[in-house]
Amino acid sequence: MASLTTPSPSASKRPPIGEYDPAAIAPPDETPPDEVRLGRYWGFLRRQWPVLLATVALGGVLGTVRSATVQHTYTSTVEVLCPPIAVESGLPPLAAGPFATVDQAPTLETMDTEAQLATSGTVLEQLRHVSGFKIPTDRLAERVTVSAAPYSRVLVIGVRANRPGNARQGARVVGRTFVKVRNRVIGQYQTRNRQEVNRRVALLKAELKVLPQDPTALTRITVRTRRQAMQRQILDAQKQLAFDDVFAQVVRAADKPSRPDDPGSDVNRTSGMGTGLLAGLAIGLVRDRRPRRLRYARDVRRRIPVPVLSDTGREDLADSGRRLRNLAFAEDARTVLVTGMPGGTADAVAVSVAAAFAHGGAPTTLLRVADGQPPIYPAHEPPPAEPDDGLGSFRVVALAINDGDRGLAQAVERAHHGKGVVVISGPPLDTAEAVTLAALSDLTLVTVALKLVTDRPLIAAISHLVSAGAPPRGIVITQQKESSS
Image (cartoon, rainbow, N blue to C red):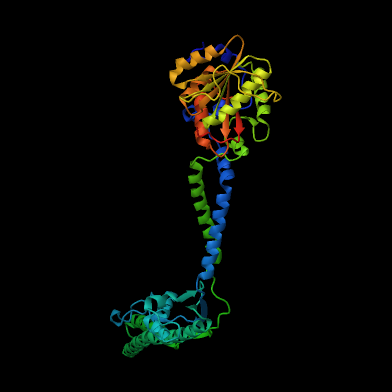
């Protein structure tokens, strides 16, 4: 009898398995820490591409629908020329005296100031009287946009409304009101500056008259210097007065917009597709973490890293038994374990394998797990068979799995008589007894019932066999349902 802790001599002579690598389903702690399996990402995309495609398409459709349901707006623009105007003269104050140096240029108003005037309360109040703009002031200010090109004195004022006509009328009112407000505010600065310059000119001329005119005076050099300084300041003041009043004017009137503003349809569609992709990845990760049911034979070949030896859905059960018998003969296996998930699906395959051995002339014993239930075939009696079905006779012995590991080993040893073959119709694959029987067997076959098994429990159960040093030789796909008895 073979020991439970060391492999049997026949197991040590077992030929190497070439169809697959048992390390592929080894437990996670046996995986090299520096190994990066890039194939898992490709496998994820291959499994979840319908979900990703559906979520991206749905996101794009929702983005398009959002763009279509957003209320269209129209923007009309008016362009106003705003010439530069000095709001500060730049001249020194009169208290500094006539000899104060003029080292500061006139301060001109900026385009930012113009923009503030375009959105001032006076302008918005006039805009409120236009049809379609009877809304609160804070929302009304959002409908007026002001911009200017670099190094340009042309102010572009845009007014947005729900209708093209309202947008044009609002732009006209804003442009006209802005020109009036600007001229009034800037005009007040101009009037004040002009008054200061006129007072400075009058004072300088008065001081110029009181200077001595005698060229033989001893202070002629000083007088000449003072006269030149005052004349220079008079000249600077006259330059300030030389600027005539320059007013803003509309250079391009408001027109009626012919097409609505872009509601960001491209952005909405792209954002929707991106959001859909992220949602698809999240859904795919959740689905990928869940066990996947094996519904078709291709699912078994794709997800389970064990070769498929036979498919009873494509060939007769007797043909599958002969194929598996030939495999056992080729590997010189004297003990064959047939286990599966669910456990009830392994019995039919075990019977067909035992019948194929018996038909080949080998003394065969079928050990069937009783598990407290009476065996289907009485012990030491051959199963019924048709005379022309090509099946041989074999012994059927009940195997109680509740006798422990030692009892299982003794039962397998007793089943060998002479040079006979023992076929074990084992318990379910995910049980400890299945691991024990696999360690006692020379060849382990796993039956998988389609639509009744998920991939992760099956891979976990196979990995237990691999860890015990008894990797399964292959998978037999069955179309049978799990027995309810």
